[in-house]
Image (tube, rainbow, N blue to C red):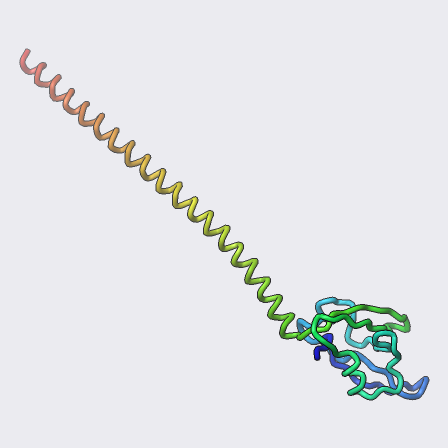
Length: 160
């Protein structure tokens, strides 16, 4: 079974007796961190509408956990304000890999665009090279024609 990517600790409640469940840490790439609603220091009060009062840590952990991809409703308290969030259970490593995979996909797509651009650039350079080469041949032919014409003019000038 999978959780929501948190670690928690039990804090003694000085006002009401008993204890409260405080979020100690958000696991990197976990559902809670990715969602961004829960914060370290928030107190979890209910899971799927059921109060955590009287449950031990293992019961709470097992109550939060469930099959990957399923939702869990978390009621929590921050600064004496009750709030609620619905999170998807999953493996924090899975979420991290999913994020990496998406980044790789974006990078690959970017490389494909770059590759197409480079290919177009190479084709353009090749076209320009061929055009320049044809122009150079044309200029050389004109220069040869001028050179022959110049020699012919000089010869006819000498013969006069």
